[in-house]
Length: 240
Image (cartoon, rainbow, N blue to C red):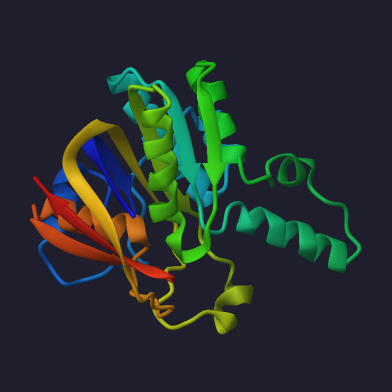
């Protein structure tokens, strides 16, 4: 498999990292993400909406809104490995204890909740979808982006995110699995700036970073070649 595209803008949020200068300082190092660091203040997302959203969706909608304010976007794709896991856990916990389920949790528990809230807050009836594909969610999302570009959409916004994983699940996770909330937004257009090919030989081991932040780290470091590990294949990148 081989495809190419051009990245025209980006924005990301994670514990202790919100401003682009923070990410540029972080990228050259070997450190991961300090889960104990605070999240940055939201600036684009209305407060009343933020109160209703889960930790990951807040960041995802915040980043998406910022990109929509700066670019004319033709289609939006949200990708999330775990989706609304926080809400679904609360629903399951309430049912197990035979307690009433929160109407807000029920209404916002679906996987496309974040992208739906983006289009509502932005008041833009834009083509949108959501996707999940396990560890390879980000890379599989890029295949959807390429498909949208080939279908004629000129500029596609992709936001990869996840919320905080509830402590209940931690004992069953692999070592180094990210459990903190983050979001990374990318604006893609057709082009040959970045080229990706696949190589057989996936690895189920976790690296401590989701694929999107591994990709962002290499991109900010201006690495001419780099690899993003996947569960079923290695995603090998090069840049013009």
